[in-house]
Length: 119
Image (cartoon, rainbow, N blue to C red; front, side, top):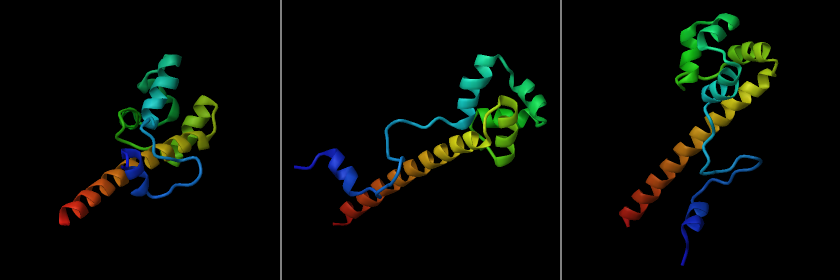
């Protein structure tokens, strides 16, 4: 008798390195920015936008998950918060990978269901 975890493993694309399928969700970079930087430092979206020289809309779209962190935004955030641009880009990459893996898992499940119903 196979259990659910065995079935998931046999239908999964093998991953190498630090990335694995996990039930834990990666935070969107905008949510991370808001919860770990803006709120603790009591900085508004408008204040950040002004300091970075970008529109408030750009910051808001990032915070609500409608926009990704670009290299330009990563450099601006790094300068303002005294971090590295790679830090911000890594957050974005982790989010993008999380979304892609979730999509792949859904597609694999659909393929398996279609394959089983064809028999």
